[in-house]
Image (tube, rainbow, N blue to C red):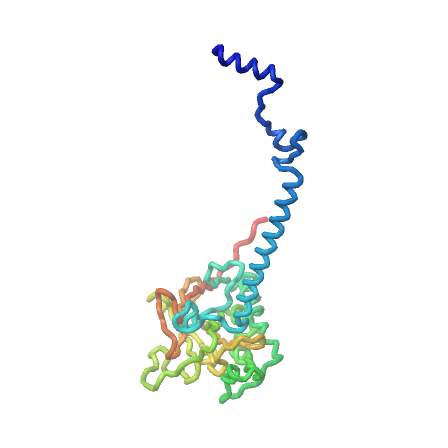
Length: 315
């Protein structure tokens, strides 16, 4: 240290002044001398607390207001954007049951004729799926010349009641375990629900060859074949219930709790044992397109009917 520096230090000590020491973390948490907590006095903490209470109150009110305005602009019964040019589109997809929720990524229907517990989950799934048709409240009987057309214009009109009796007569009902017990499984086929959609009829010369002889104007005819040449050879006899497919008088679909979606059933009467068959089912109407890449208007699933002695389970 130079003589000049020592002189300044001595002068400071003589005047009773001390050098400021750096604040420790403990002093930052609570400084008794300055009366601060985390570097702020009680007054400062009070002011910043009041500020943030007001700030977040206004922010919450703004959010709730925007949400209320947005919800008021929505119709709980009809999507804001639907139809041609939207993600929903105008081409209905095809679905099937039984589709096990426990294994949602699998499209395989597999069971062993000699093992009742193997087909029990499929029977249960179909029971659950068809249970909604037992509730006939707020529905009406519709004759052959009646339909759901008035649902779009008259809010007091009740939807047509869908009768499962035709499936029972074809041994595709609950009492026959939907054909699984006899090795003739029945699969329910339906279309996705599109607001206002209804089938457009083919004219006399445009009916596809696959459904000629079964097509009925006003219906959506279902046709199931093997997906490959091998599958086409082994799929066996397929029975459609009803033969014309999904009855078109239950369209258009309109959102209401009591609406009953029409379905058809496909019964595989002679499907081979111990062979996997990939099935491709298509829905036919003039306004249903088929696209293999996007699977528009069609659905795939596999059927594997085993007939062998079950392997004993080890303890």
